[in-house]
Length: 256
Image (tube, rainbow, N blue to C red):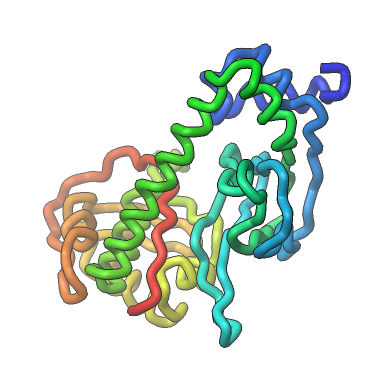
């Protein structure tokens, strides 16, 4: 506890990721944790780096991506405030499986994997906390494979919007992307022009209202119909208002 900044520990306690972790375990895990601010477009970790620990986003956004032999970039995940990444490198060889780069100015915390391992040897119950997160990521990976294999671009974009976080603003519930359409295009595996065309079509059909990086879902049932259909599925205008979004959907695909 002596090596952990008190203000940082207080911030960590307020995050959903640590909400169910006992205060004593959190204080021990945060021992020696390092908080650092990164400028936009800064590489945090590279593929095959030896990373012995994990990161957590306090502010900003970080994208996880792979690079093909031809240099083409494919975004795998986008992490926002309160979300951890690099969990897959905690044990084993500790090699990072992809590249991580900030999208905007971001403040991240790095936790030592050695500290977590020492804690787990004394009290294995802490591992269940991380297993829940890893299990959720595995489920998302299976959904990503479904998207790659079965859904066209409208379905991928609709699925992204349905699972994105919403926030209240001026009496409306908006999906605040927090990323540009260019980055969204990398996530769903398309060109920015193709993404713009799909959003434009959904807007004209009254399913969403798109304003820059803010999108209001007007017809959640119609959007769900697009998300569940094939490449040529069209929105169904049911006039049903949207509900509350859950999580931050990070599906990716390589074809339009």
